[in-house]
Image (tube, rainbow, N blue to C red):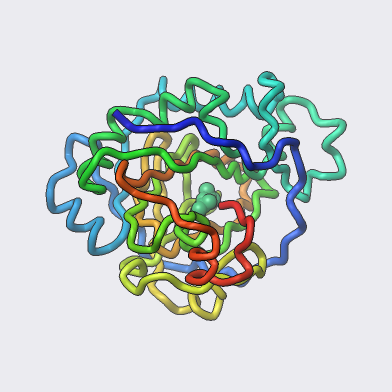
Length: 293
Ligand SMILES: O=C(O)CCC(=O)C(=O)O
């Protein structure tokens, strides 16, 4: 079973709008290399786990079926449309800020940037996070029973979905750097190079932690990323990207007219012990106080 302790909620308690962000150099995401996913969880063999250890990531298609993807998407929609009034952890895109009061339901789902800490509020999203299919893969990656340490979703709406600049997820987590933490990014729509699929720096996790700075976000400096190897990871709905929390990754803006919903969960081994924020800031940089992934 995946372990999970309902969190003490220290996160935002009302919807907000994210700050404006600057544009970026598209060369940060230029690549001719596209990942080759494993075709289904049953096809994962030891060689794929070696690939994960060496390269820092492993895309797997078909982990969730159409019904599971639909259920999770409906869960997100219910939260976004305010059908669970106690749930407030929603951040809207700045480009939609001026019209928030007048949005139809259809428009509202295309105005959200990020929602987080939702598994306590929606059983379909909790079921996805606790999926035995994920558990089986995570146990092989982590070497022990997993525990859920974070849940969030970047929605990246058509036309206005902003970039998520290159970063290491571990820079956001108060766990000592030696702790294994695995990211699980699940496509709920087709994720493509044009609507902002994941981009990863293969083997980048092996160089260890990188100091982050507050620029367009809490991120790795563009100059540390430009010219480094980059792999695009398109996925079909229900496909999953497993990645090491030290792997530099990012997603370009969604300038297409296609939705790109995804949810992202993070897991550590049950034995992992958190550390204080000061330890994280000492490693990843002092500008990272109170940042959220
Ligand atoms: O979903 C995305 O666009 C990127 C998610 C991500 O990299 C993160 O929040 O750590």
